[in-house]
Length: 335
Image (cartoon, rainbow, N blue to C red; front, side, top):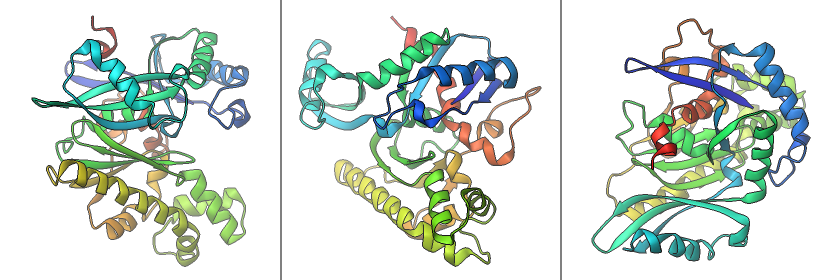
């Protein structure tokens, strides 16, 4: 669980505080529901009391959910007025989500309009997942103003990038999955594959018959770069990496077919803790025949005077929470 607060200072953004807390993974069940909030709440209280770097001065909170726990889709509907739109979106969503509408929270963003059609990006989340996070927030005394998929937070951070005007594939590496999205002013397409940092570590551990700790060291230090174990590491990671490449190509095909070659994708952006593995960018560049780079971490993008940054290897893992902290209050509190 990560936390960060940003503040505006004369057209500059400053990191005022951040932290990370670890908790027992069994506090969350296989469906993504927090079934035991007590250990998570205890870990967060300990973080705020003893381990926070800088300061957090608000109890208003925006929360990101793992994107693979959400359902998202770009849809096109005939032009409708606002009063008709929600019901039309709900009818459309019922066709592709295997969960009854009464068990979902549903929201959408209009991404394009024409004389006859309207295009939207729709997100739905099981209520039991969101509600379990709200129970945790209440236990911590937090006032939740927004809940969104992590990919939306990452897109908000990327939108601040100097090259965000070039349509991009964004890959957010979590511990268990890589969330893939197409960004062209808005998120337009998404995909998820089991190719996160922990998945890589466990694959190396199993293939090389070494401990998870040793595998983590090899992944962080050498990764896919030239080393004595490069061949073995490449063999261990190739199944996960090829699944990711296949999913990226699928999302790219969808985008090309949907938008008929308009505004072609020009770059691939990696972020999240798993993106710092040496050689990963070169691997994807060779496979996709497209420039791949790592998104600037918050400490490279924002002021942080007086706030000690984390270790270099850990900075990219704060991309999602930084994107959350960039939330414009008008997005939430507008009439």
